[in-house]
Amino acid sequence: MPNLRSLFGLPVLSVDLGRQLGKVEEFIIDSQMTELKALLTTKPDFSQDCQNILETDGQNLFGALFTNLFRIGPDAVMVRNERAVEDLSLFCRTDCFYYSSRLLDKPIYTNTGFSLGVLADIVFDETTGEIYTYQISDGIFFDILYGRRLMPPPKAQVVGADMLIVPDAMEKLVYYVD
Image (cartoon, rainbow, N blue to C red):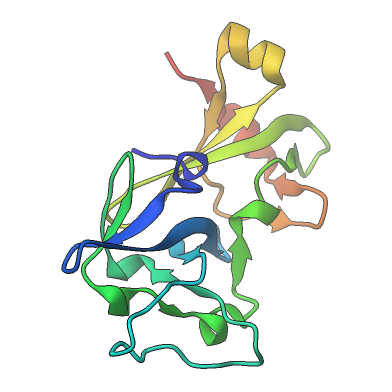
């Protein structure tokens, strides 16, 4: 299963035409932080016959909904055709989503004030977008010695500007990878 950080910068390729449509720049995660909803790309260079881009306030957010992805490989993200990469500006205007860059590297605390570490990465299912685990770092030294710890996504959590707050019971569910 891939993790989010490994996908940043990968090319987004069209399977039908064999063209690069952009590069992965960001991910959109649902408000419960249980699944990936879309990925954002650099602005695509569409051919003249492909007119699926809408102008919205001069600020377009291009990307593909997770349901429109064909495959996620180790070296590229594949979509079936150019129409999979579209303007997601209207989709992104709701408050029901988080950008991955605003979540990664945030400290995680329990609601009783115990620090669990820092959200280093998110592991997900490449076919459904379901988030399986959070990778938690205690710093580079501990990561090298012991590895990162994993935690399942909590049922309830608070995503603040500076940190994530999870239920106290999550402390018991954090484990090291063998």
